[in-house]
Image (tube, rainbow, N blue to C red; front, top):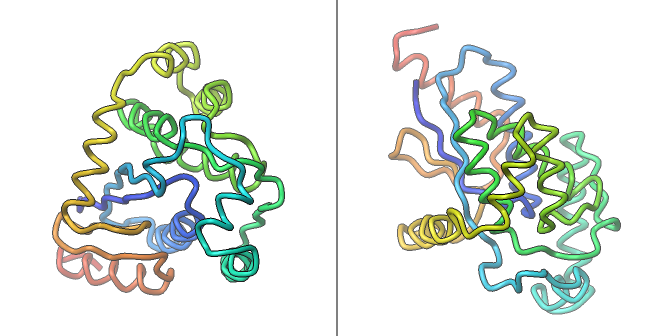
Length: 213
């Protein structure tokens, strides 16, 4: 197997689009060589623990309402092309995602990372749920087959909080400044929500290199 590390944030729409495009390629090549692991990267590491009003956040980030509408119109266009029905209007707050990243980490220990990442994207972008809220995270964990009572206790503690911050800081130190970023075989960084066609090309080249057809 070949390691595919994905740096992502569950409130990043391009990460959701990138995951969808990658999965389309993986479905077309079910004997792909990838072993996938998700890694934390907070778009807003300084976000208050309670999050903030989404409209205020977007207008501050993009320099006003007009620019925010333009940027998100483009995102929505790409999402629709991939068959993703996102409901940006349902999102009232932009959360701090450190607890969501802790949940993804714990899901990895149980071999359920992909299900939890999917659940977080769906909850935030399609259902408008606050994925900074502990009860919401426990509900998503339960739906992915994790023990919600254990997750609830962990979330109320500081377990792995500093580890997530350290991993995020390490990625920035290594030069990662945006997500999604895909790292193939610990060597090749592939930034951005790349097309399914590019991933198919990568997969087929890797399989040829392994001597498979």
